[in-house]
Image (cartoon, rainbow, N blue to C red; front, side, top):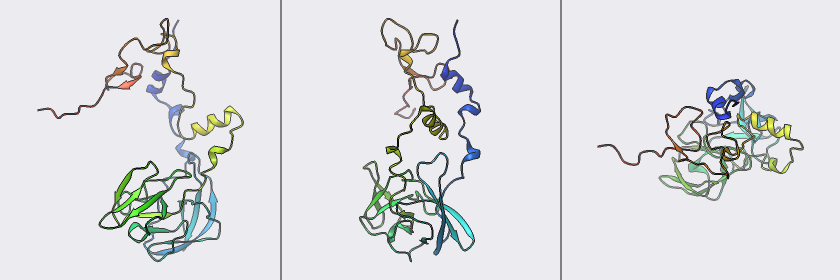
Length: 233
C-alpha cells in the first residue's frame, strides 16, 4: 500500500509550506529621508532574518534598518551626502570613496535596497564614474547608477553560524521561519511508492531526470526541462 508523496503534498500547498508572514516585521528598506539624521532607539531581532535590525528615530518617524557591525543604541545615523563614512550611515554611491565596504545597495535609485542584505556580508566600491563599479560578495563586478544609495559597513550578525543549535528542534524552527524544508532525503534512496526516482537493485534514477515544466506536482522532480535557447521563427 502506497502513501502520499512528499512533493505531491508540497504541490497542493497549505499553511505548512507558507512563510509565517504574520511574524515578519515587514519589508525592510532604506529610509526615504533625503538628507537628515536619526538616532538608534533599539536593536531587535527579526524572525526569518539572519541579521539584526536597528530602529532609528527620524524626528518621530521610527524606521527599521538592517544593522551594521558596531552600531549601538543612541548612535546618530545620517542619511544623505552630509554624513561621514561611519557604519550605518546611508549615502549615494557617488559620494562613497573607493575601497569602502557597503551593504543594502539599491538596484535603482529610491527602491530601498536590494543587494547584500544577509548577515556578515559586504560589497566593496571599486571605481566611480558614469557608473559605480561594485565588487559583490560573490566576486562579480556590478555597475550601479551613482544615485543609488547604500549603507556603510558590514551587515551585523556574521558569527551566527558559529553558534551550535544544540538540538534538532531549534534548527527545524529556524528553517521553518524562512519557509524552508529542513529534512531532505534523496529520491533515489526512497522506495518506488515514495518517489519517482525510488527503487531498483542499486541507487539510480532509472529514467531521464528532466521533466516538463507542465508536469503535475508529483512528477515534477529532478531537473526542469531546459529553456529554449533560440527564438522561434
